Image (cartoon, rainbow, N blue to C red; front, side, top):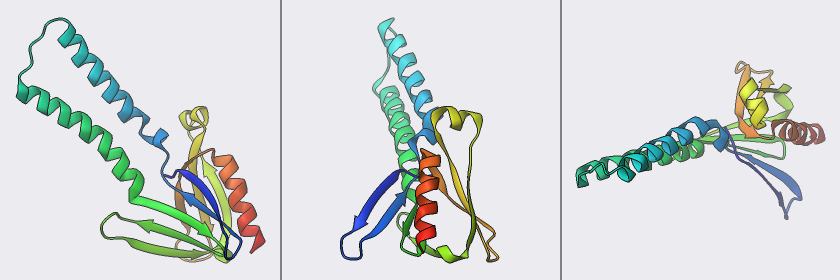
Length: 156
């Protein structure tokens, strides 16, 4: 569920990994919007008349179709820094969940055939605690992210 970003904290020299939902997750929605626009363009090209109300509805559907994936992308983020994993959910009301990397027993990636073709997948960690498995997100280049997370966890 996450866009990949990295940074290094100058004060503590710790590597920080920020994960947000990949846009590839919403590829189907984006393709439907393109088809929707193409059908409208076809009707306009062939002389079909649309009222102002129709254009407003069509515009609203396109805008909502583009906004919903962006809202969902920003709904949850995961920050891996030091010996903690911070999972932050929500936009207006935010919920913070902290996991210690010392409680992680396993880290793995799940990918469907479509996800393997487009090179994105879901990263999950298994914990000692009652939570069992925790989903960190659907990221681009999951194998690279998995290696970076393993290196970061191994250092602690």
